Length: 141
Image (cartoon, rainbow, N blue to C red; front, side, top):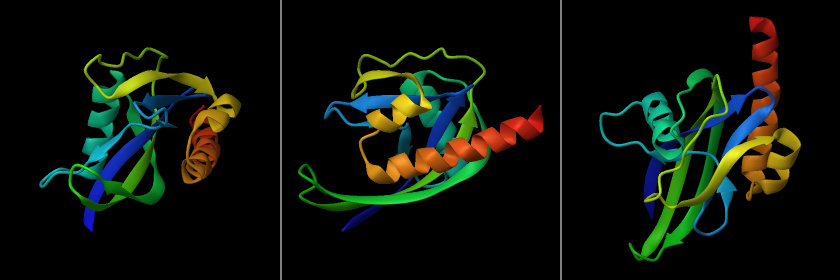
């Protein structure tokens, strides 16, 4: 099995979170593979910038998730281990690149995002991260 270490971000702006929909119709968060010499937090910020054209700042770690799938191109199972960060954006601006593998994106109210997010572990991550984000935001005021 190929194990890939990845990093990603849950980007909040006010009471909304940024989601991407991939070519399979799955809704989730920006993430990418950590290459040799890269730091997880830098990969997460870069992926948010690349995949959504969003400038964000990390305000807290969010946790970890893992998932496995069979890669048809590699002809072997793959396990993605993802380090997540809670991020804040100052505005709701975003733009997905036409050549990326995403078909839709946007900032969504948390209740709507919980319905859209495809995988249960991502729903749990969103729920916990939003609560932590609100606690941090209320302390910062």
